[in-house]
Image 1: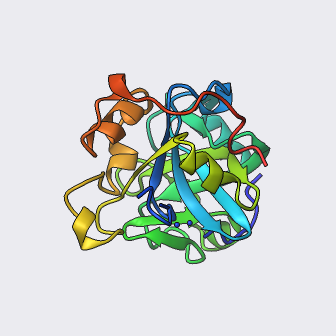
Image 2 (image 1 turned 60 degrees about the horizontal axis):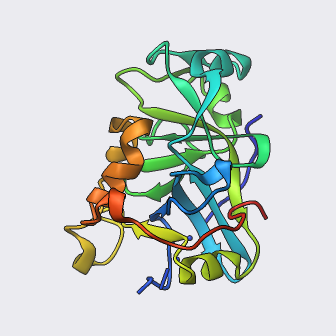
Length: 216
């Protein structure tokens, strides 16, 4: 079920903030929830951190989930829901690129909106989604970190940060991915592509050796 929440995230040389960046898990992270995960970070402050895994597929078809929510899916009939993380796996999130589809959506970065409640969508008769008009990711669950937990994992080398171009500082303008990349890239290519966008050969990534990230 889609619920209301207002997510918010920042990193260290390791940047000091990873808010609105992507985090790529290093291969040594053995937790199956985060194997080769690419996490779109929504929030990161002294109270903890929150993000959505965008490259892990669930077995549920988007069409099936959309119908259960009172929506009509106009996109790829084979599209699958993404597993956003191990926390609250029945909680739904919709990331999309249409500012008009949901008047209550939060713009998280330029060109990307987050819907956590469908009340305004259904009230406004905007029940059709997907296809040419609106690009969409449906996600269930999220990744959450307790205060200081993510900072420790970053310092230990458990994650590599990838900027979203147009969001971070001008110095990083040529590195990272575009907002469109989130919709245009197939999930099985996201981890390799994200690392390549910052000049890292995925086959040479080394980090720490374990832990249970993102499950606070």
